[in-house]
Image (cartoon, rainbow, N blue to C red; front, side, top):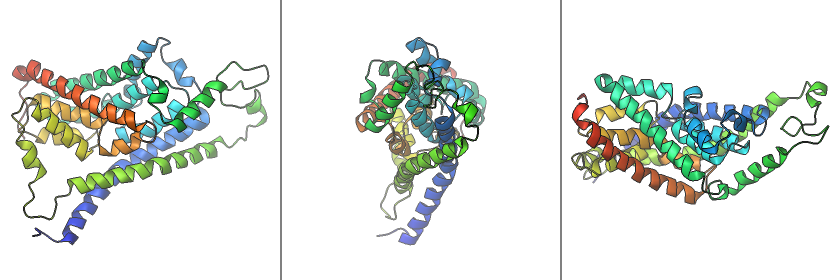
Length: 338
């Protein structure tokens, strides 16, 4: 009945679980440290002043922030949590959150390295599609009330910060962070570093719980079952390689289940040699925007209903765009065979 013992299955599960944990935990920690310093040092509304005043222009600019602040999908969620609470509009926040793991120099370099001779078209296509998808989501969010996107606890914090950003009376909140004017002159020993680290610790505890739940499910799904009659997942997926719509759908589903980091998933995509250009592109774009562990991380800031709509919408949009991309570029882009 069993093709191997339970002990062997647990060994494989533990290895995969620890691999994902050790790969993602440092980025989670980095993201929460950044979020803690943002909480302590960044005045409410400061990000608004860095982006164009025009709402549409701000969304387009937010999709390029990953070039300046390159982070992976694990690190960006706690940073976005803090920026939204500091007053960054949800449309801009989600545009940056979706685009940053793809539209950044590290991901571009890893994709170019993985695809070798086809590095220029695949890398540029991945960055372009990732940017377009993120901006499209941001533009749609301009028409949706924030309460339909953000969790109630986050909305309460946003509301409080919006009140703080009202014009201050003389001698009152002139720093944008709730401190009276002149406080920095009289309280130079204010332990803001300790406040930043405490905020980072709180964020890490909140996010780490969801991250561990997510990677536990990922490890269970991706560990070969101990049953001898079980069909390998790769064999099932390879059967869709010649399907126009089934191939990108299968690889996007695989990206969702594997939950790879955006800085390393290109090497897995390159090894999927039975699939064509567009399907691999769907794998490289959908995975960094939506995977199993991200579902739980997104739950710390977004409503469940919006997360479901976002996952389904991205799946359909990226799948359709991948099919179109395949039709346009397939004749001129031969992919190397591993």
